[in-house]
Each structure stands twice: as structure tokens, then as C-alpha cells.
Amino acid sequence: MRGKVITVINQKGGVGKTTTAVNLAAGLAGAFYDVLLVDLDGQSNATQGLGCGKNSVSRSVYEVLMGESSPSEALISTGVDLLDLLPAHINLNGAKVELVGMEGREYRLRTALEEIRERYNFIIIDSPPSLDLLTINALAASGSAVIPIQCEYYALEGLGQLITTLQKVKRGLNSSLGIEGVLMTMHDKRTSLSYQVMDEIRKHFRGAVYETYIPRNVRLAEAPSFGKTIFEHAPLSSGALAYERLVEEFLERNFAVKERKPA
Figure 1 (cartoon, one colour):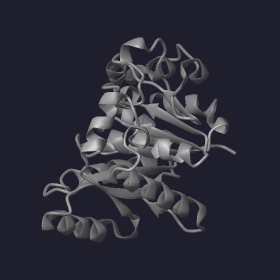
Figure 2 (cartoon, rainbow, N blue to C red):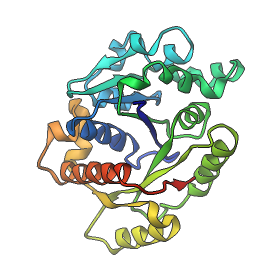
Figure 3 (cartoon, rainbow, N blue to C red):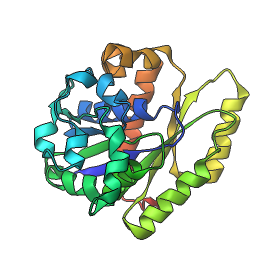
Figure 4 (tube, rainbow, N blue to C red):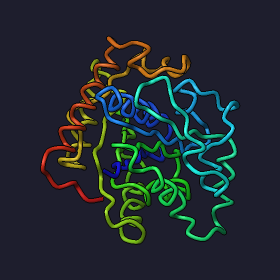
């Protein structure tokens, strides 16, 4: 079985992108699936969020993209059973420029992942908060995308550009790319605005929006500083319970016979 590759993407920062990538990956591993998390963000937040110091990484996804290391050589076993990490390093920020002149520049990650894809049931990519060559590499390697959207007034701002990018990648680089699901994050049940935003997003994306939404939660915010997933840090918190429900819904969608919404 070749693992399903999914990119978690939003060009806006602070929407829970990395939190979702880390905890979706950890939750799937907790459900007894073999999972690889690829940190494709030069900030290395996913790498640090799993307790791996960015300065202690000797080989990373950067060396893999540059052809200086095989994926197998760069993999790290995390403290979560069944969850491996392809870590990021600050050098990755330079890859955006270095990739420009390379042959097959849009497919460097896809080609690399083909070497190890059969080891995993799911490969989750944490993409950078921008629409650059690294993000294009993630989308070209993926079968689908998860889009986290914050429950705030400007939630729809910039989404048009993101959807256009998905459509261009689908047309020109990866015809199998679709929208895995849209996830509402940082929901505040005390405000009517959060519910209004959810209604607007559901109208905009129709059936693609997960029923599960992620609440604002202090435990979720502080877990990365301990180098832990929410399931390790605060397993009974509202954040952990929400990501448990997301994993359940994600698996139901993947193993139900239904057509994936196109990008």
C-alpha cells in the first residue's frame, strides 16, 4: 500500500496550520496507522513541536530536496509510536531560491517521497505559510489538502488566492489533487462571530468542511513549548478531544466510498 499524502495548507499564519499537522499526524498514529510528518516550513515549528530541536538536526528535508540525502537517512523517530518525522532546518528557507534553477523543481519532494511511501499509511506535510516553490512541491506531491481556517472576521481573506493556486497545481502539475477537508480552528463558543464565520465557510466550501471544529484552548497553545502533542500534554483537554474527533471524522471520510471534492 502506498501511503496517502496530504498537505496542510494556508498562506495566512496563525490559523492553526502546524498545530493541525502535528496533532492530525499524532492522532492517526494513535489510531494504529504508520504515519510520516514532513516539516516543510523553515520555521521548524512542527519539528520543535515534536520535541526535536532544530539545531540538533543533522539531516533534514532541505538535504533531501537538494539531493544531498535520501529520505531514509533524514528520518527521525519521534516519541510517538508509529509516527516518524522528516524534520526541517533553517537552511530550508534558502531552498526557495535554490530550487528555481533545478530540473524538475516542482517535483523534488514528490520524487523523494516515492522512495519511502510504501512504509506509511499516511504522509502529512506541514507546508510554509506562503505560496512559494516549497508549497508547490508539497501540493505536487499530495493527493489532497487540508485547509485550516480561523474563526475570525477576516477568515475568507486570501482564500481566493489559495484556491486559485490549488486549481493551477491541479491543472498543470498534479491532476489528482483535491480538497481533503476544511477545518475551522480557534473557535470561541462565547461569540456569535465564530458561528457566523462557520456558516459562511460552510456555504463557501459546501460539503468539504469538517463537522469537527477546534476550539481556542490554552493547552493547545502551550503544548509545542513542551515539545509534545496535545495528546501527550493534556489528553483530557478540549483541544485533545477535538483533534480526536477530527481523526475519527478524517478516517470515516477516507474509508467511506465517496467522491473527494475537487480543488
